[in-house]
Image (cartoon, rainbow, N blue to C red):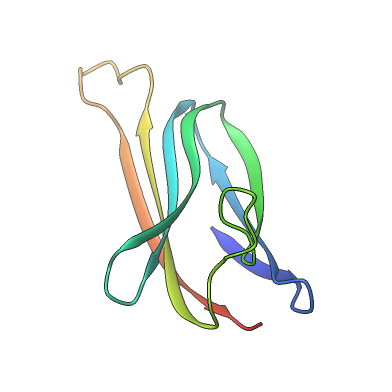
Length: 101
């Protein structure tokens, strides 16, 4: 999972991630207090490389976005279908995201 600033001037950020198999994926942004501030992905995705770009200035299309500061993003993926032994392959990772406006 990698992240990059597409344009600090425009507060646009991209998060790239790879899925080894199809699964239910959630990608969320949290503030330093652990409060969820944005859901970027919450759907079933196919295996392969994916990228989600978001504008930190906007929330739901409204111009009242995230302030400058430290945030964290977390991806959770649950493999579908389950493996042969009946166990679902789960993956979770978190990274820091610095938003500058």
